[in-house]
Length: 155
Image 1 (tube, rainbow, N blue to C red):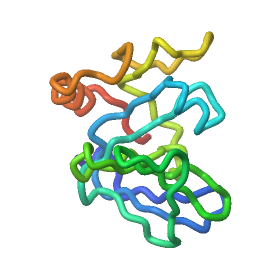
Image 2 (cartoon, one colour; image 1 turned 90 degrees about the vertical axis):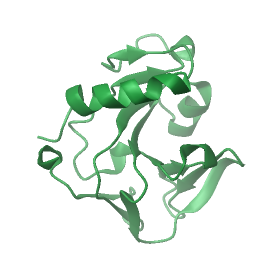
Image 3 (tube, rainbow, N blue to C red; image 1 turned 180 degrees about the vertical axis):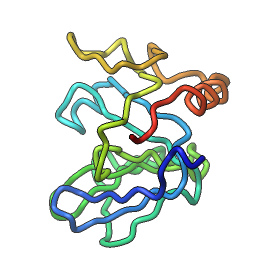
Image 4 (cartoon, rainbow, N blue to C red; image 1 turned 45 degrees about the vertical axis):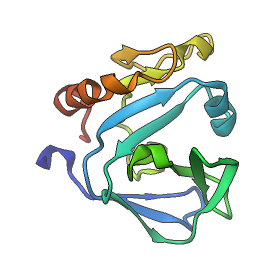
């Protein structure tokens, strides 16, 4: 576990919201769905799925934004509007954290990419596994085990 070089500090663009990651991610993913494309104004979103208790906001008060649906809550900085992380009842206490908020995200390579059916031409992630939509629930244990042994680490 020491190869993760934890904890990691993170902040939004303006620095009003600061966060800390204290546990290794369970998997790194990229999502190519149209919703993530619009949320990021980019070709895809990046996510580190963090275990319960492995993430905390240390300064500031994120606000809910985007669609504000019961199945997923997108948390943003109230000032600069950076998309910081997502929580959802279906995640069972896990947090989908946006690794671009890290002080150093240069090591992050998605292990899994989803919604490749909506992928924009030329968008390449380097992911090892690709799925037309989200991976089936029964695949997550194997994907997390693969990421734990083969996924990229901070340098």
